[in-house]
Structures are given as C-alpha cells and as structure tokens.
Amino acid sequence: MKIVNSLVVTAILSTHVGAQHCKELDSEIAYVCPVVRYCDWNHYNTELQTQFASVGYDLSSWNSFDSADANGNELEDKLWSDLELLEQDTMGDLGYDEEQFNKCINHYTGFAWSALDSSSQATYSFLGYNETTWNTVNGTEMEYMGWDDYDEDAQMKLSNVGYNKESWDGDSLPWADSATYPGEMSCDAMANTDYACEAPGFETTQEVSMGFDGMDKKDLAKTTDEKLFDAGLEKMLKEKSGADDASVTGKRDGDSTRKKSLIVDILLETKFTCDGKCDASDKEDALAIASEATTKLKAALVDGSLLKGLQEAVSLDILANVTASFISAEDPVAEEVNAVAETTLDAIINFLLGILDFILGILSFIFIPV
Image (cartoon, rainbow, N blue to C red; front, side, top):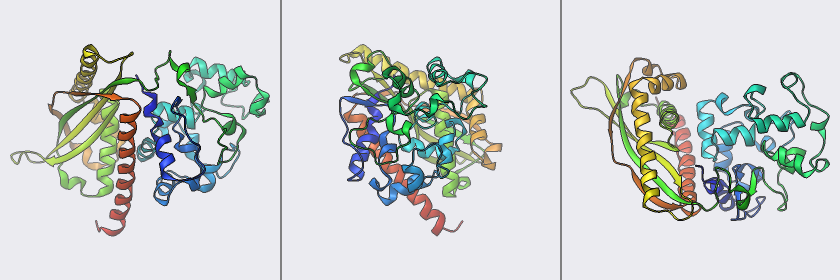
C-alpha cells in the first residue's frame, strides 16, 4: 500500500526551500502529484535549479504549462520507461515514481490506446478520442475547451489523468494560492483507494549483500561510472524484489583469494500501513513482506534476470563479463512510523543528500583527472 503523505514530502520540502510563489499546504489534503513541480522556478535556490536543469528544465520550460510552447521540456512528452536512467534517478529525487510520472507529467499520452486503463480511456473518449484517432489526431474540439467550460464530472475525469484547472488551461507559474494542485484529494475521498492520509504503519529495513565476480572497486573509479552502476542496481533491486526503495550503502573488494570480486551492501525498505491502530500481527505482516522481498531478490539472482536487467540498463563494458550471486541477508527490522512525520523527514534528508551527491559528482568530473 502506498502512503500518500510520503508524497507530501516534496510539498513540505518546497515550502522550506524558498519563500515565495508556493502556496501553503493543507495537512488534511493528500497530494498525489509531487507539488515540487508546481512552485515557481524562482522559488528555488541555485542548487535546486541546477538539479532541475540536469533533466532539461530552465525558467521558461519549468514555469510554462502551455502544451503548444515550443520551449517546453521534451522530458514531459516521455513515459517513465523512455527516460534515461539518470533522468529517472533525478525525477525520483524530486518525488516521482513511475506511476506518478506517467500520470502527473505525461498524462498517459505516451501509451498506446490499448495500454490505457479503463479510467484513462474513459477520459480521452470523453475528449473525442478512440483507438483509431488516438495516435493520428493532434487535438479534438472538446480538448480545446477551457476547464470552466466542463461540468464537475468532466473536470473529475481530467483530474484522473493528472490535470487541474491551471495546468489544463496552460497557466504559467506562479499559480494563485487559491489554485488546487493536480492530484489533490481530501483524505475523506481516499478511503477506498491504495492511498491513505496520516495512516499508521511500519517501515521495514533489511540489510543485504550481493557479490559480483569479475569486477572490483577499481573498475568503478570514475564517479560517473559508479553513479551509473548504483542507479542501475537500485532500479533493478526495486523491480526484482518488489521493495518500495533500495539503496546501495557500500562497496568493498571481496576475499583476496578470489581474482576479482566486488561485494555490494544494500538496504531494502518496505512500507506497510495498518487499518486503525497497528498491533503485533501487523508487525508480523510487515516483516513477512520484507522477507518476501529478499526471497524474490534471491530468485532474480539465481535465474540471472537481475544481472541481465542491470547489463541492459547500464552502459558499462565491465558488466558484460561479470556474474552475480547472493551473499547474505540480515533479519528484517520493522519500525512503527507515522506516515506524515517520519516518512517526510526521511525523504527530505534523502532529497538533500541527492542534491549534494549531484553537486559533488559535477565537481569531481571537472576537477579530478581521470
């Protein structure tokens, strides 16, 4: 289950980074789309603007929501799966996952008609599209209507594909304090969804180690190579284990008796929400889910799918000649958390660490000879 208030992360963060052009947020509202995207470019300091620029944004393309703007960022026309690995990594730092990016940024327009879910097909059918015209028609008469020309039911359909009044009408940032944000929903409206506001739960962590024979730390001496390797491995770890997050916490050369060996230490994190107050059985369930993630990871190493996915995702010649194996896993630990306070704090720290890592990478590339 997703915890919506973990998505409030970027919302709360953004109100602390700048002092203008970003509306005050409501703790009773769930912000499904990371609202860091909806604060004016000048709301952010130089370090964050550099982070946005790394994926193609500048003042014009960030503030513009006009779909006809020739200066828009091409990134927003792509699906998550079409992004470069480092683009996914950067957008992840801004609070997006695949589901949120495809909805809130791309509005599912990159999918084939048959790949749209029933809700998205209903929205675009309402706008005049069908399977035949989806990839051939640039716009329909209904699509050129303003937000206020639609009734409440139609506006809800547009909300389901990540729009609000301002983004649909193409209003540039900053938006007024009275504006809602795309994906904004009251907590009461989310009772029957996979999202929850202020839901109690557990965050489980598990330390895992895996080995790569055929490479060692010297093969990742370049900062850019190490960043690519880490980002690719973290992506595959999440995909193959089903964990909510995975991070590379350390790397060390293996036993000296082995020719070339690299051991990578990993932290898997899985979140679990409870209905009402958490009890001992909820904790057991959370730990069971964490253990299942490790079991899936082991299976992906045994059948080779994790390594194959890593080799396809990361362009590093050294990976062509390595083998990967599971080494060890600590027992998972479950900590009871409040979805708002704890998850937000963790994400803010991770976000800021990501920015620092990005800056250090640039400095290393400029000043350290390779």
